Image (cartoon, rainbow, N blue to C red; front, top):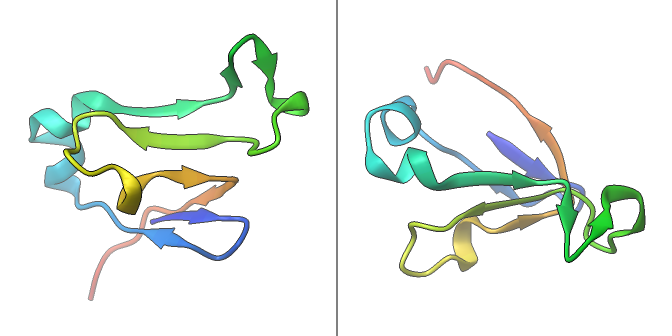
Length: 71
């Protein structure tokens, strides 16, 4: 589960990350346009460039990544 500073959450399955092509296109950005993380307005970004519509899984202000077992 990826959590942003504003509380927005995105959940990925194990298969989505490790057994599908989409998993090869997940990126955590700590620098953009030559600006290091300390100078970025959005801080850490997570993006999936393989998505057709990236809005739902685009996370700005990534605060935490938690690996959990779903019950």
